[in-house]
Length: 116
Length: 112
Image (cartoon, rainbow over all chains, first blue to last red; front, side):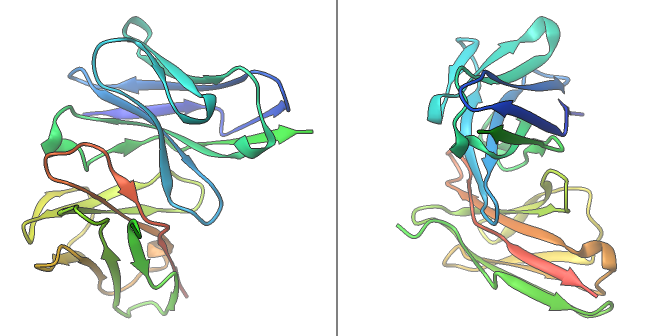
């Protein structure tokens, strides 16, 4: 079975500060890992995805995440927060392969607030 | 490209009623999945349709059923609505051999 734990339901940072959203996963096989963002009244948008290979993954809007197998973590970072980054962020996991690509297991989310 | 479209955007129903939600996938996509997102929670996988058949199912009761049409669009049906069915229902589409999911904006269902 697979699961995801997001540490901190709410994170608040100042504009220009480092953003760090924490995620730990559990999986019986090497998983695919994702970060999605959800703006109010909108669907989910993929920020970045790890499948295999390079453990540092760069995504859209300046976000990146590092896959650490030994720590079963996939934390999301951004060097400098912008007001437009305020949203709900979801870490997620799935089994590898196209047949499992629709069945994504999501964490409970972290709401990111940006202080002026 | 219109992306994934869902209708209606909002819906209010009473306990015990039945509801149908609709989804049109992104152009070129043939696989549709449905998710339930309760308030303050992450989305939960309900089921996936490909070639008009349910291919995978999450941990949801039989009150939740679906259908996929030859044009790849899909419906989610929920019977005997409970208060706990109040949630945002998200549709996502992809091509069967592809791995990237595209999500719609969802249908907000309120059960009173």
